[in-house]
Image (cartoon, rainbow, N blue to C red; front, side, top):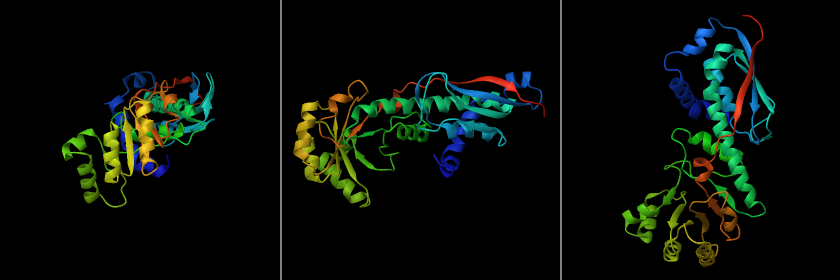
Length: 286
């Protein structure tokens, strides 16, 4: 996540998170720290996983005080082990205490998604299938969660509703059928937009193919139905399978022949990675 993206897309979200946690003051910190005193605290991994969100973690502190210094001993995408020293944060102890929870919330959540994505993607190793995320993200966390998917070895599906055309069951119902929905999409959308159609059976697959869909999603079909669908499509459109895909069942989809597998679980079901800030100490006087 580069600095331009951080400034334009992330800073206001980080500030809102800080405002949520500090509505008027951090009364506990202000009670025990009457003035600015420089301090240092360790960033420690408490379990094994893949790191994501270090820039976000740092930015939370620097939004409260630009003079805060963060030194990392790992980078996004690196594996960490239990007990590993990931970095140190130095600055006004009041800032270290007040920003701690918000900074860790982002880092733990993003690292958890990267770790889970990595574990799922590893099950597709040796295939040409790309593992995709979905829009099933936490409100106001999408930019962070989708970034974490990429760090973990997955790929992003469309970012939001403005990013691509995906005709799902209710769109098809509203349009009056697959052919009509695709026709309307072609008439309305710029020619640079690909059109993806969600299908639930082989008849819908045939309709989508005949209508000229660019991508055909095979949603909640059996592995046997999906194999037949891939045979029918025969490379005339890209194929994606979806529907309750998790680490526990993705292996059964690896030999179907689809181009993409999408999984909402990458973002909505990944547990956090346990990371903490420990050993806060004073390092001098102001």
